[in-house]
Length: 59
Picture: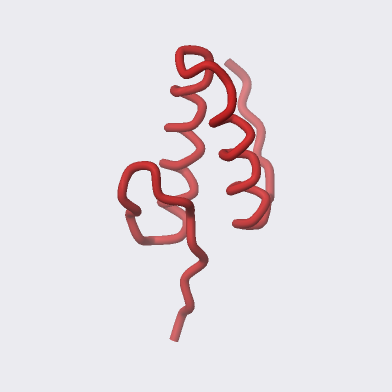
């Protein structure tokens, strides 16, 4: 499968996850997991399951 890279803000990702959350679970759960896994890898901190993504401050 061909892949693409999107650049979104944390707020945009949270909005996307919120919208996906209103869809039937069986239709979107794998996509939600992929989005969360990729975003958490970029943010550097794992979040508890179901928690919204948070931007981290870097010192």
